Length: 109
Length: 114
Image (cartoon, rainbow over all chains, first blue to last red):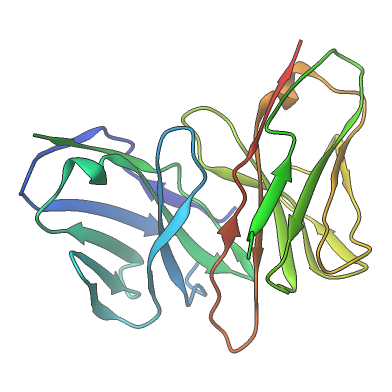
């Protein structure tokens, strides 16, 4: 059974601080990794994808991947109240995405 | 482009009734997916399709059926609805080719079985 583990939270972060979201996965064959954001009552939307070990930056978001440790993370700099949502980690495995249960992030003004 | 559309948005079913959840995409994507999401949980794959005429089971296919006669449409059929099928259902699509892809989601259908 392929698994994805995320801390369910909620993770509470002050506005303007860095939010750090973590994810571990079990399938060593996964090559592509995705972070989706899901607002309450809405559908998931892609915010970051990463395919190689190391860091990938896109605006206030940085994804970090370590395939040897089977670990992927998402950093959100200068956190805003609009970043409050559930963040889903999804490694690609055999042409499917395996979804974590998500981490609920709360940004406190 | 409308992206991925789903109908209906909300539905109440009685136990034993049947219904079809509609999904359509206008992005010419080859892959389409049906997920369910229970409260506080991640997405569970029900069925997926790699192209017109080709479908396969996901993690939780029991109680559901799909068909894909065109690239655009991927309906999900619930037969003999049960309370355990109360959930939010998301349809998604993606273009797979070149090793990298993004799944785009519809707005979801909220289903309540009583």
